[in-house]
Length: 185
Length: 382
Image (cartoon, rainbow over all chains, first blue to last red; front, top):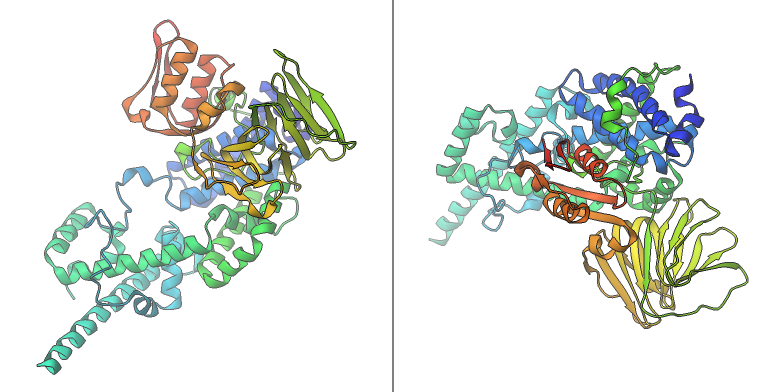
């Protein structure tokens, strides 16, 4: 099959528009099959395919070894998919991080917190911390569930429990504060 | 615990009405608001720790992919080797990063599955209208971070522009080949490693005979450097500029060398003191005066500085500014729809190509389309 023949890649790199078009057109169904296998039949598959083709198109001249066209294309597709996983495709739908209710656009006010952050970190289980770090990197809970080999419901339960532990810390801090007042009186 | 707050940590899972209700409740419940503030502070701390230990997420992807031979380009391998100690420390500190590595490798395996032994014949004849244009940007396959940054990803060729304020002659080294241009003359030089140099008028270039990865320049030039595992070094009278990757410009005289970086990364150091190197980020400028250490990097207008090359090096430039520049250059009316005007574009665009081709390339990068023609005026719309 000549389409991924290094000579075709070389001609495309040299400015042969016909070779370039054939190369990209042959790659397109492969990319579509790949993205469908990773995210299912979501509308974003079209964008993923097109953006990956764009990456290949614009980066083709920099490919030093035409025989490595497959690895070259794979990297473009994998990076694009990481962007998708990490929420870059849905970013425009929100004016703020979807995980963060915009109670304070300037960000959380940590100055008045009654609980030290380091102490708060200690209440996180290793698994909860792992999940929250993946969320901080932008991965969605359903993807995180696959990454830590559990269910989405279990992931969300871990997050809820972590939040409840933090509330518990605050309650404890409040009680200690009241006790200290009583002692002072 | 008030059940309304049960899902606070999972805000994205709520439907719009529940979100609104939660927002209202948080506005009147000081305890819940405090818990939320602590929650966000905690997450901010986790995120900051990740960014501190892994400032470049792309490196993690390269690390994941680099366990198989012949996947990474030489430049990527070089980056990975340099970053590996810090990367492995980050992996040890954050188990979540190993989850990402496994995910990337699973994606790679899925790509292998999707790749047929015999690729299917081309069946998308109209694809040319989408991506059939000749590239004006020599980007590497490493992608950008967002759709609006389609042109931002690492460039695999480095363009180096030099503009001399005065003539300074290096000694003619026996291991170098000399190229010179007269007034009004320019020359394009192909180097042995595949790199190319566009030498401006009244300039002199000495190229290392073996290897061609060290050059000495007086005058003005643009370099298109083919990446490899070996660094490309440009020496001027006062400074040494090391190409770590991608696009940058230099302005050199006998007493001063200033560097402007369009994309990628370079290191600038006094020739006499390589240890004093500063590393520039895209859109930054620094300079070496005499034998002093480089100045702290400051912002620079890359597009203007390198415009003499015949290429506009846009650096996160708003489309509105680009359209204004193109309209003045081509002498035609061009406008961008309001929703597009603020989108930013990074990458080199040749000023020698037809206006229609430039606009189509911009449209491709911005998921937009071009309406109109030179007679009626062009309009970029989405």
